Length: 189
Ligand SMILES: Cc1cc2nc3c(=O)[nH]c(=O)nc-3n(C[C@H](O)[C@H](O)[C@H](O)COP(=O)(O)O)c2cc1C
Picture 1 (tube, helix red, strand yellow):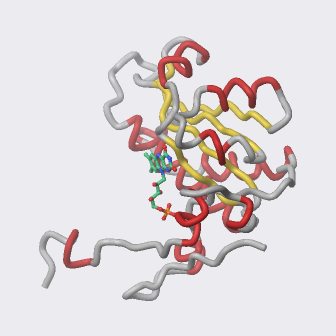
Picture 2 (tube, protein in one colour):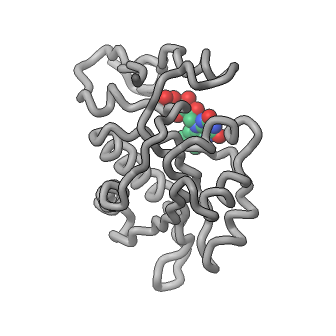
């Protein structure tokens, strides 16, 4: 049984956004390649500077050698729960345009694609948990020349918090909070 972490919002935000959260407990259920491809295609429909589409992904399904490699790069605080994900997806980006010109907004664009991926996955009942806590030097050596690691995404069908040890179990149930509009809207009326 998955956990309900729906955001309580001040304004009528759409359900897909209200219901997105970063789960740590995953069911022992695989993500089919077709579903994964749907999720990755959703990422590709993001916006990007000059439509350069800088994002590149490497997908590792649990039970494969690549998954074990990705899992071994995870920080100590991520490995205990993320190793049970159905897939670990390495998000990376090119750092210059095809013309060779520097692409300072590449990280922005890769991050935006990651959010579309996350919302598409959420609409299919699949949770996505982004992690910066992994060995980026190892990821960089794994990636083809010129690609920069962005984030590791743990993906899977969310499951009960009871499968987790502390401190993750408590964190899994903690309410999600956000700054209110007047804390980040610079010119609020
Ligand atoms: C760039 C980035 C790095 C993150 N790194 C980690 C991480 O290493 N470990 C982790 O448990 N969560 C990580 N998170 C998840 C955030 O903690 C989470 O998105 C935030 O607390 C808000 O919770 P929510 O996504 O459930 O709304 C990361 C999120 C982002 C965007």
